[in-house]
Length: 167
Image 1 (cartoon, rainbow, N blue to C red):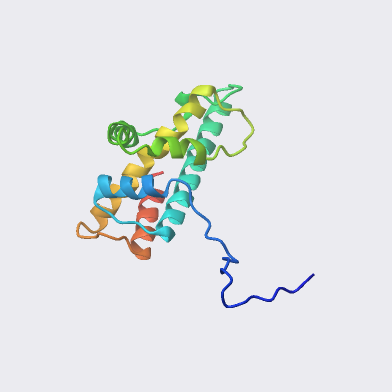
Image 2: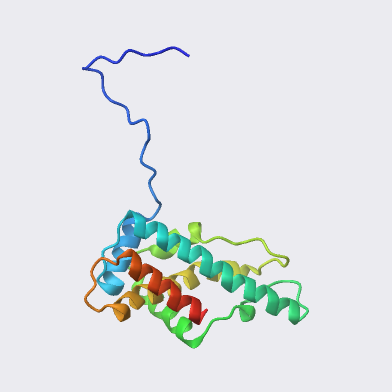
């Protein structure tokens, strides 16, 4: 491999380009509107990991319910949507009209492979369910500490613990 000599006047090329996370502006705006929170790049990673894990948990429970009922596909009725999550989903739909987070979640929400396939309706609802989880998460920070503006690592961990107890 040929070594290149860089002169002081040559432009510097970033050797480690910044990896841009998709939907950064929408997620930041969503947290500001939903709970008056400012989130940073690390918070976005935590957020995406949270959504991935919670959607996978919901789909795993739905798989078990569909199997128990001898169905060959996972239907919407198999998803363990509580009354509280359903209300968060409806509130998210109203809130998201101006933000556009659902479009980002539609591309980012994983569909973990399990034994049974998902119905088209389940696949179509996953982004809105992730939106409801997002709204509930944002509001959890205000329950933990009503004065918080930028959630610290400890607050993220506490919010995750609360969700683990509920889901």
